[in-house]
Amino acid sequence: VPSAPHLADAAEGALPYPVWIGRRAVDEVGAVAATAAPAHRWAVIADSAVAERYGARVVGTLPSGRATLFTVPPGEEHKTRASWARLTDEMLDAGCGRDTTVVALGGGVVGDLAGFVAATFMRGVPVVQVPTTLLAMVDASVGGKTAVDVPAGKNLVGAFHPPAAVVVDPLVLVSLPQPELKAGLAEVVKHGVIADAAYLARVAYLLPGLRAGAPPVADVAAWDAVEAVIARSIAIKAGVVASDEREGGLRKILNYGHTVGHAVEILSGFSLRHGEAVAIGMVVEADAAERAGIAQSGTADTVREVVRRAGLPDRRPPDMAPEAVVHATRTDKKARAGAVEYALPERVGTMASAGGRWSVPLPDEVVLGALA
Ligand SMILES: NC(=O)c1ccc[n+]([C@@H]2O[C@H](COP(=O)([O-])OP(=O)(O)OC[C@H]3O[C@@H](n4cnc5c(N)ncnc54)[C@H](O)[C@@H]3O)[C@@H](O)[C@H]2O)c1
Ligand SMILES: [Zn+2]
Image (cartoon, rainbow, N blue to C red; front, side):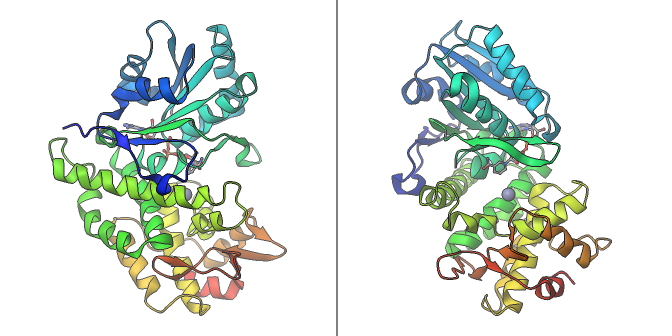
């Protein structure tokens, strides 16, 4: 059942680019791109799994003979300079010039990689982001960060390159493997905790249904609810990045759950998905915020309850020592001048602003206590 693609009310119009959302919106990519980023040539970039499902459909919406599908193998291990080099060479071979628009069709890996290709091809061409994972819809596709991974770490070479438009078709989530959907829910929960308690309560109500996977295509009411969640999450992220495009202050609140989360993710050898690690991180950091007297008591219990309803893990794996986690937070890039900085809730829906800094140093003992 299609829902007419409409402009998402992203951040009350604060974003400099439109976000279109609607069931079957992938069939409108050509129409949106023709207005937002008119071009002579179109380079649709997707990983091979997404290309197989949606590649031809998206290419079919673009002027015939002027759109080419370029693919990379799926997986974070292909978000590299080598993939960037191959894609840009293939685009040049195919005759793409300065008058090209890139369409990034896929999850966050392709969004980041194709976004970086667009940022650098001919010194920069427009990109239209068409996210196909929940994580990419509510997080990666909005904000303009693009990057590749390098041996020294993730996302260390990249550029800010905001999209010309974002097109979100929630219905593509029907083919997304359930663990990927669940991992994306962690960022949705994060948006509720950092900005909107009523939204968190609505999400908590929907989670038991969503953790099992996307609703059946014909369930209009369920899809309306999913669409509303995605739109609200995009609006929250957009509202934050729009007021802080280059991460000076407020944007730090989006790191909630991510300091402990990244540490746990790395220590697990990436056997935990990003969203799973962030779920653990959100619970631990809320607990630490209570212990430090920053968060109202009960905040961590609420976060834990919502995380459980999503079917996500709420504690570190038992074989992962608290000391090792704290040690790993020290190598995170958010550590500054010795003390590790955390974005912490004051209560659900409101983050603590230490004099407008939105992140505060926490003593190791406090974090150890929460991890234990
Ligand atoms: N730029 C940002 O602001 C930002 C924010 C958050 C995360 N990220 C980046 O996002 C990446 C993670 O993204 P992700 O979780 O979307 O992973 P992903 O892009 O690897 O996608 C996960 C898997 O799902 C498959 N897939 C995608 N859409 C599908 C669909 N509709 N149906 C069936 N299969 C589908 C893919 O082929 C892939 O195997 C990381 O590299 C991270 O650094 C970027
Ligand atoms: Zn994240």
